[in-house]
Length: 489
Ligand code: ADP
Image (cartoon, rainbow, N blue to C red; front, side, top):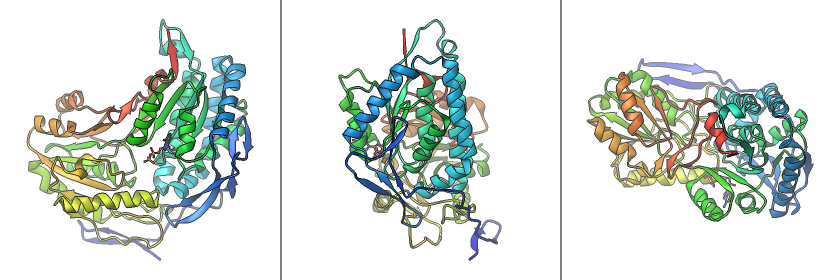
């Protein structure tokens, strides 16, 4: 059946035929065990859980449910590998392994992209063009640093920390694994990583790649499971560092659990990022940037531009163009290369988004959703706009983690800075204007870790990423990202 794309602005209707990415090259196992000490081992409880394709609710594979005993095994393996091999290996040799992992990931890029789309529900366009190439680039980038740490930290003695426990979420499963594993290895640490329970597949394929790369056993261990598996990593006494990306609630639990211990901690938590459009901005580009910031990825980016601030004089025009662009977005099968908006990662997340949409309506904001057909199987949410939103409203304050955008207007620079900073979060922001001086002014006053100017959601391994306030602390990426994995004296 032909899928339809509509361009209402020009009054044109186009028909696109479906263009499904092939899955034939992807050879998934029916059941995945834990990757500990270079071997695939059964979970000590004998328990497995199912990972489901959120686009059609079909079970993809069974995944080992790791418990405290398994985590302990993984930590012991990581400690031994740290002491006997990895921490004493010449850094240039470590770099070769990291480089090799990056190359092998590139070789299996199509497979990784399809697995990511099947497991996470994100569009194939996103996983193929963004997640997988970026994940490879983080490994390449940190491979380059491994033997140059004395240049990263001149006149300082640089030591690794030991065993790093890393816990990651479902929105960028492979990319988050790369953000965490690559700098840890480059600085001489070993790793126990737990992927999210709804998206374990690409971390497990990465484990196969790591196995193929010949990385010494125990240097990277992948322990799958749920929140209790993550908690077992956090609370393990022989772990030196915890790196966590996920919800602010769990971040707070982890911070409390680690208080008074010597474990080093970095937290990358939620966000409610402001995207600010001034009247001198290139409006069409800005509208595309807004759509990219919140809708293309189902709003599943912790730094999603979910609060839009538009200067009053252009508000009507921006809203009209935005609605028209939303009308032409195609929602559906994430494996279709035409698809702009894929599936929401889980039923629970879809319910959370619906809860917020209901709150938005109750709060009296004006809602707009394009008339798109929603597949009957799978978890999907139409792109949603709320206009005339009060600054204090729940939908403008709380993280929704879905394709839901709130719009407010502003008149002056000071007003928008005050509004944008009036949030418990501070992960990212976007500024759209023709004036360079205004960009510099705002970027020094907005309390957010990343500020994009005339673009949005651009990532690069050389740039640090991280938050202010309840969005967490510590930086990942770039030279700053090395800092989180070393002891300096
Ligand atoms: P999200 O809302 O993005 O799913 P979560 O914070 O619930 O974020 O999950 C992020 C990661 O944290 C997942 O891998 C999850 O299994 C793990 N996790 C959940 N609860 C805990 C906990 N109490 N301690 C450690 N890790 C946890």
